[in-house]
Image (cartoon, rainbow, N blue to C red; front, side, top):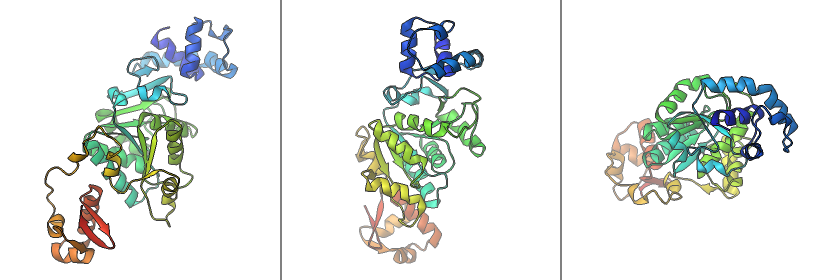
Amino acid sequence: MDRLEYAAIALSGDFNPSEMEKIESSGFDSSLLFRSPIELNRNKLKNFARNFSSVIRTLSTYGNFITHRDEEYPDSLKHIFEPPSVLFFRGKVSLLDSKSVLAVVGSRKADKYGTSVAREYSRLLSERGITIVSGLAVGIDAEAHIGALDGSGTTVGVLGTGIDVYYPASNSSLIRSVMEKGCVISEYLPGTPPLKQNFPRRNRIIAGLARAVLVVQATIRSGSLITARLALENGRDVYAVPGDINRKNSEGTNWLIKNGAKLVAEFGDVIEEFPEIDIGELHEGSVDSEVLEVLGTGSLTFGELLLKTKLPRKDLIVELTNLQLEGYVYEENGRWNRT
């Protein structure tokens, strides 16, 4: 059975790799499969008979795919629950087998705090060699991809549509950028529209590709918690960024921390879980910051920093936020300190 026939059978009947192994070992090709005596789901066989002709035509015009038995298929996905038999891709498919991969997920309705953390953490982690994977949705997903592209461009997007369907439309430009500088993948046949049931299903791929999942912001019923559960079921670690206990967007992440997820208060907390990344490199080099100069080795309140730096209040907030995200300063009892 060649690659094209393998992919067409798998996609037309939605057969998983273990079912495809049965089909291949039986010696039946696509023309005889429906009459084969092997034990397969009858509904899947009916779908196969109905869809095979159209699927083979689609695949004949779109060759950018890998199958479960190809060398390029990522090892990280081979042993998850129901790995995809076929993956369509655009971009650098080699990124799927990166050793250091972190999934960054969260709410589509993220606030300024969530989007800032997602973008900045992803940038800093990407700069240090970690590939960021997410779902190309609006909100936290988009910010994670943008941050990674700002860092080094090592990012993978997993679509819940066909590889040629840019959804949501507002992210079309971002999806193209990820295709150009990173990689975008989909288990769905080209042309597949944004069907509601496909998005929770694709989350197993996001979790499976990564060594760990970082949830930045999420409600208690968020799809991000589905991704976190899938990560745990497949032996991955789960990290979460804490949030305001009075905000709905923090309910999910705070619940994860309460139930054993690692609390992430700075991006260095994530780096610690990737031993191949040299933690000693985190603070190498000089940082041109008036705030750091003013702090010296002392401790100052926000008001004192305003007076000493003479920065506008808004600019000081941004500067402190960036320095905190990068691990150069921390706040304790209302006073700012250098790490």
